[in-house]
Image (cartoon, helix red, strand yellow):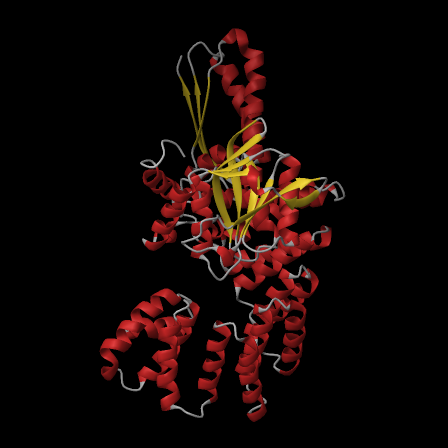
Length: 191
Length: 365
């Protein structure tokens, strides 16, 4: 299958989401602005839930509200429910990916991104070749992520669960997106 | 600061980072002024420190507590918790076993042992132990809730539902248990479970009408039932009504609380609903004579569409009708006759439970 490129914004949001709820397993959806040919460029990540992941209604609801969906993020080993949701996404989009954030490997000094990606081959989810995963400017991304964590910006992140608790909160996280853009624009021209 | 810590203790909040910040300062600088409160604060700060991986702070608190209460089971439990945090599970288990030998009814130690099993990923053993625990201590709500979560993670929805039923029996006014039970039923799937889910979502809403999850859940379960090919026409109709009501409530909630994020569902309802909420509806129709027939039909269609919206909104509507007939329209008598014989009876026949307050016909000829 094709290459997958992970943008800075997607990684930072995933990272902040897992830091915001260190005691829960979380999941989220990966979005792409356009799927051009073989390469999938993941431009954004929408944090979803941090409680009762296997329960259906809220996940279904979130899936109806999000568009240009290309994948699923999860923090834990691929549980059956994560695989089920990923299968549903794969029905809509062939090159869907399942991304696992490895909690034990997340630390500020990591040289290697703590992610494990799975892709769908012959209706099974198999590990994707590490060389086909690209993270643009990993050092800058990591620096931005740690900086935002230290400055407490992860508290600004709102996931779908949080939105349902208080619907005035914006789960598209526009303010956070702007912040990430501000921090990353000196480093590279585009996200 | 003391009061903050007390409030967090009483509300059982798990905001460990904040507790550590406030508690650390309190202990290091104001210890002498705290009196006997200091011991419970040490305990609170220690548990929070373990949560934040601050072993240094946890050890300090633990040592103070050990000095003051050398033989206390409560302090021994804290020692065990520290060992758990350091992932020295075997030592922690030995600790808890020792407590249980001296005091077999110590629930805290038993629960810590179950937590160790959960932390090690041994869900089946954890479930078994928790079931045994609950046979002895049937009223322990925290334990029932924990068991329901364990079952949900194992995808054993039937047993999770059973646990939540126990919780609902002892806490009939808790909307969160109702809503969680409904979610489990929804996930189980199947027509019976969907109907149950819908009922419990509705119950949760009765207990707390601001529960968005319950509202969305009601909408989704009703829509699913209505969309199923196996249901009777009446059931379909009823569920469409419920779904539409839920959609309206959701739209209203978003409007009222001014969120700008998600796109509203069923935006087609919002236009009609804003009209009903303001209770005034203006229908303006221009009908040049030569297009009389077409417009007449068009006018009726308009009214019928509007009435369909009203019926689906299911709250009583008061209609103020203001009909403006423009210049070059039907001859005056024909218009009046048309309105009296056709329009008004149609509206009266179809308006669910409302009144037609007045109508004002402006004839501009």
